[in-house]
Length: 390
Image (cartoon, rainbow, N blue to C red):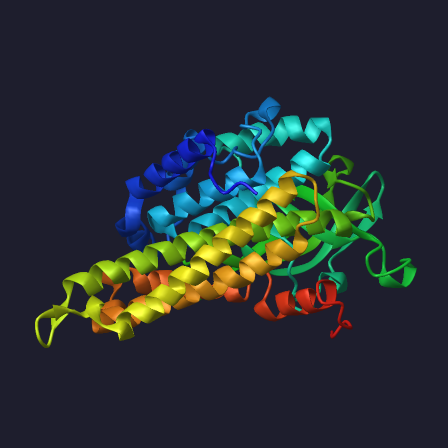
């Protein structure tokens, strides 16, 4: 095992950190207050080549691996954006980039990947449904064959950045369950234009990640062309799983970045704030221990995430590691942000201190993109050999 980063990875981390810190915490606080999309930082990310880290060179990317992407995202998010910024990597380099690079045909790759890398194209993914939730096999959105293409009908929920997206990766059934060989048969992936007749969306008001809108999306007899199928018709479920596992890696990277910022803010405050006998409150174990625990959890999550990404890059199974890393990181970011607020007392509850935004944003990722409970189900079944419980 090799724990030292390569020279290239060190340079990548430094570049990402500089881009993140150039915008910093105040930038994100202002956007959060307005509910404004972080267009400026995303363009800077793309101009620095960070969006295309894991995209093939022939399509404008750097052709590096998932480990390199994890390192870049972690350091970028630690510059101020936290896990919210990593969501933009889920949308674009993962839902758009990984999907097209692995499953797309030559025409699809040439048409969309260069624009994704440059920031000219934005992506979203429409998977979750009101009646299915985490159970993707129960989705009801249906693409009915119509000539050389399909007609798409259904509803999705909690879809991120729909108003800003140019393209949407839509997961739909192309066989009715009654006609399928099994639940995994008859699911297909399509990349369609956001601006299309019959596609409408409605915003959802929410607690955190307010710079990236979440929406309900409605498909009313939406035309899908034959050229918009990505991957294998009816065989999209297994192909989707690899996309979702890379999403876990990027999520974990953002949560590690969040935990790092929150812990640093808490330490700086604790070392400066003096009470009682004139000693800094950071000298008290009641302050030290929770932050030390958060740091331990963060380091463990980082290592598990690197393992998952490294296994991915070596074409080895990595689903368990990706899920465990995400579970660990959700707890680490939750502990770090909560204890940072507690360390700062009343100031931690203020907008000025930044940690309340980090807490609000990080809380989502104990639910999404996969809940803690579903991760435990997966580990119990696949790693411990226990009976399926759901």
